[in-house]
Image 1 (cartoon, rainbow, N blue to C red):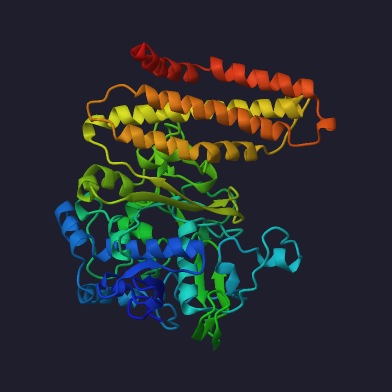
Image 2: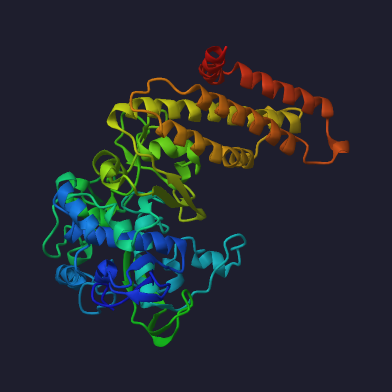
Length: 536
C-alpha cells in the first residue's frame, strides 16, 4: 500500500457515508469529507497530524494572503494529487527492496515482535507472558490491516514512548500534548488548513523527497557505537540536533528502528474490523535509533520553560493538569508555569483571527499520560477549550483578568484538598496517598462557570482596563459554594458512626476561614465590592 496513491484514511462524508480515501481526496467538494473516523482515539489524532504534516511539507501557503485564499476556496483534488505524487516514493508501507514509511531499510533481527506491540499502551511481551497485565489488558491484536498498521507506526512515532533498553523516546519526548484548532461547521479540509503555518512563518516547502525531512530515505544515524558506559549525554556521534535537519523533519521523526515483515494473509483486521487483502502480524526491531536532543520543537505542541538555564521543551501529558487551569498557557502564555501556546495556536490568534470572525473555533487537546521515562500509558485524555477573539489593545488586560480567576481557583482547590484530609485523618500531614480525585471534582464542578466568566470578559470593549465587578462577584460565589459543597460530599461520604464529627466541623470552619483570608480571594472581593459601592 502507498500512503499517497491508495485509499487508506478512514473518513466520514457529508451524507454520513464512511469510507477510506487517499490523502489527496481531503479537498473534494462533491459530498466533502467532514472528519476522520479512526478506530482508536490516538489514531484519530495521528491521522490529523499526518495530513497536516503532509500539507506543511509540500503544500504550505507562502503567506497569510494565500492561506486566506485557500481557506475560502480549497484546491482542486487533482492539484493536490499531482503535488503529493512527487512524494509517493517515500510513502510505501511495505517495500522489501527499498525505502518504506518510518522503517529502516535492510534492518535485520534474530526474532520478530507481534504487531500489537506497535500500539501505544499495549502491555509488553514479558508482561503478557507472565499474566501481569492486570489493569491494562493485552488486546490480542494479532493481525491488522494496512491502514491500521500505517497509523500505528505514525502514532508510535508521534507519542514517542521509549521501548526498553536502547529503544529511544520520540523526537519531542514521551507522551507530548498536541493542540489542534477546529471549527465544528467546517469540512476536514478546513479543520486541517486552520492549523497550517505559512512558509514565511515556519519554513519553505520541499519539492521532492529528501532524507533530511524523511529519515528513512537515507542512512539511519544509530547510537549503537555509543552504548558503552560513559557516553556523555548529547554526544554528537549518537545524537541528532535540530540544526542537523530540515525543520519539517519534526513531522516525520523516526526514534524507533522498525521493519514490517511481509503481510501473511487475507482476512478481517482485528483492530478496525474491515476485510483486507493483506494483514500484518509481525515486525522486527533493533535498539539505538535516532536519539533526538537539543530542544526540538513541534508546531502542534505547546512549550514549557522549566528553568531559565534550559531550552523550552514540549509540554508532556504528565505535566498537564488536564483542566481549565491550563487554559491561559495553551492559548497564550502562562508565566506562572512557563507554558507557551503551540505555534499553530499563536499564529492563528495573531494573524488569522480576523479571517474567522463568524466561525466558532475551539482548541482540542489530546495526549497519552505516560509514566515518566517509561512506555506505560496511564491514560488517554482529550479535552476541548473555547477560543475567544480579542483585539490587540485588550490582550494584556484580558489575560491578566484570566490569570486572577485561575490563581484564585488554584488557591481554593489547594485549601479544599488540605481541609478534606484534615477531616479524614487525625494527622493528615503523615498520610501519604493520591487525593487527585478531590482536585478533579473541583475543576470539573467549576469549569462551566469559568468559561462563562471568560465569555463575559471577552465581550468587554477593547478599552476595558478593569475587571467587571460582576465577573469577580460571580466567580467568588462559584468558588465558595463549590468548595463547601464538595467538602461536605467528601468529608461525610463514610458512615457517620465512624467519623470524628468534631474534627470534620473544625476542618469545615478552617476551610471557610482560609478561603476568606486568602490574598487572591481578597483581591477579587475588592473588585466585586465596587459594584456594591456604585449601586449605593
